[in-house]
Image (cartoon, rainbow, N blue to C red):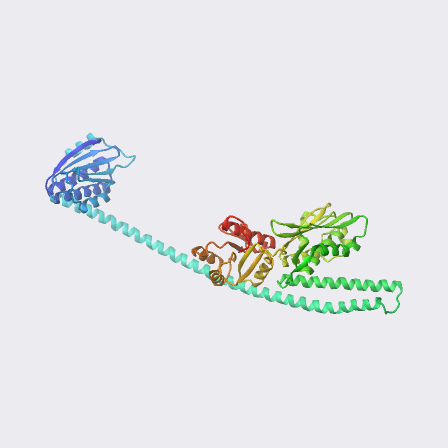
Length: 565
């Protein structure tokens, strides 16, 4: 024992247990314990004392004042067959520490004193305990009844406070339920409005498509007639014409040809916008194509001040692409460069980017360049950069927008870098499909927008072996369970099962949780806080960043860029 002894007593009969209880309470009170802790210690002593007496043992009790609490040690004859009843177990719940050692014949229990309060000395506590008179069983019973009544009153008070709290929680729950229900009604109304707007947009798009189809047909027919008549007039077998007449008729033919080209470009733009511009890949000899473009465009650049050059890398002489679309795209880029270059060189450079499996076409000129504030606007239909050369040259503002539409339809990208007064470089990147080795195997596109799915399919042509489509989250989950894809593109807003719920289902499925996922969102990618998946915004979707997003998802999955599976 290391503490200061306060008092000791012997427990020989039931009345001694009552005296020990009273002594324990008074000792706790004198040591500075709160009322509830006084009752707990007294109850623990009485329970252990009855345990010992019920087994026929006599006991001695010693109260000690320790540095951190009040320690009570009850001694009894050492017995290895001591049977601990419920009293010791109950006492353990009422004090801070209890130790039973039957071999030594001791039960020690500690009740810690409150920190920071006044701490009486052992002499003061001994003096107060010495003044106590022995308690009769009746007096102790009355004291316990008073304690029980006080405890019961506290319990009733706590029940009353708990009932008030429950009423407040219930009222808050009802309020939140009403607000949530009102919010849900607003969301449902918003979805209905969005559906209505979408239907109106689809109708407007269909009407626009019908308009373009009708206009193109109505314009092409007379233009073809004009061009045919011009050929008859100037061809062999026609009436002799004066030089002026021949010149005028050739102007008519040239203007009609220009109009026919413009109508064709407008129709292709409309088709690309509605997702109906389908490329027809075939083997393309890039050397022959570049030479044909150089010969065709040379008349427009026959001047000692501008040189038209072509450079083809040895490793990229051939590729698989839609030759008509590729030719139109490059012709637009090169003719544009020649148009705005008064001195220097226009160069078509073709190379292979082995890292991205793409053929890279760069059209570089030393022309007037494009100011930075106009570099994105030049891809808007009918927009032309203001300037003196634009006034002198003919154009509709469709060349670059048309070229970008064709590039995207072929699954590629078109980028422009320019410095005002120094020149422009336009870079076209297309998937290199000559070797027939896609980068990824099966890709599943889960989106309720059929046009978006068709656009993704075109962008992944040659990059993925198979592209499967699902119109909602539930259909996507069923398809993945039946045949897990190598990568999944998941839209967040889908019917039946939205993208967020689909991602949770995948995470809960041990077989599907490892599927790499690219999350597609209407918001900008940086506004979506999800870190577990690669994220791409629909507004930013292009062939190159879509393919890079797929590669990123593959790297997240296995730590390396996957090949075709």
